Image (cartoon, rainbow, N blue to C red; front, side):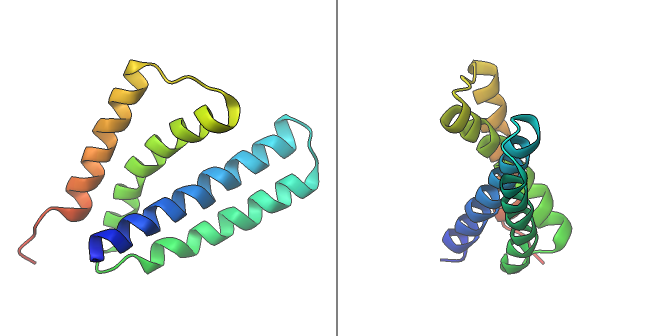
Amino acid sequence: MPIVRSAALFLLAALLEIGGAWLVWQGVREHRGWLWMAGGVLALGAYGFVATFQPDAPFGRVLAAYGGVFVAGSLLWGALADGYRPDHWDIAGAVVCLAGMALIMYAPRGD
């Protein structure tokens, strides 16, 4: 169960960080206004707390592993929210990043 909980926290973190950044982007670049930006800032702030709930991993490991989730999640968000079509190199890169995340976070360790 710890891996399931950890994976769920990574997904929540991605939703908050990528979604928050997207809301800020929409508010600034797409001129949707300060409410969009404020929602983004709140989501980004909430993201900052989610990583603290990861079980039994130091800060550096959690944030390094989350980088892989962020890469894949950003491509998925772009595809769903903005119609961006990742090419095969984007997808291959995301798979490599997720494999790296799994190694960093879930590899058996003697410590």
